Image 1 (cartoon, rainbow, N blue to C red):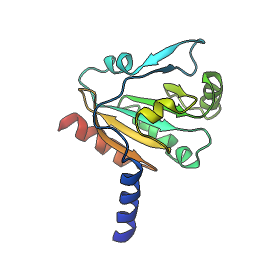
Image 2 (image 1 turned 45 degrees about the vertical axis):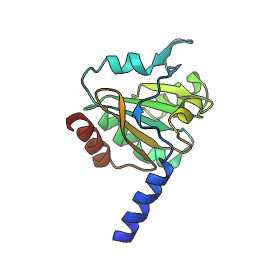
Image 3 (image 1 turned 90 degrees about the vertical axis):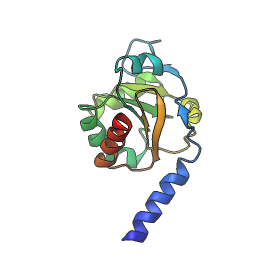
Image 4 (image 1 turned 90 degrees about the horizontal axis):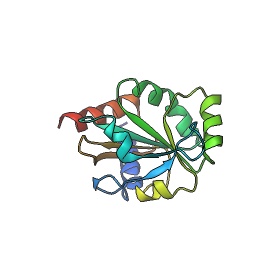
Length: 160
């Protein structure tokens, strides 16, 4: 069992090796479910939660592992600020349809071509990135992350 855990942790760390450290890269992206042309910026979104650790959850509509995390993300956003980013999942209207079909009440930035995710060094989904209250990247994980793991990472970023 210990070997399996070590392998999973090692693979996740290897996949997140290109995620930058320090201040999170700024971005502006279309917002799913909003009027055409509406953009969301990381700075504007973070400003809604002063003094709070926040999470970015990068997912794709075609990703089966992302589907497994949907209920965890929905639950998590009741207690912590979460901005989801739909990577290579179509334009804003298509992403909005996916969110509606799956009944996901997520605030979602659209990364249709993967360029936003690339700024974060991400080449795979799902990815879970935690920013501390100052906007620095504190934790990054690529691959399945448990609900407990998500909450623990946010709590650590908030308190330490």
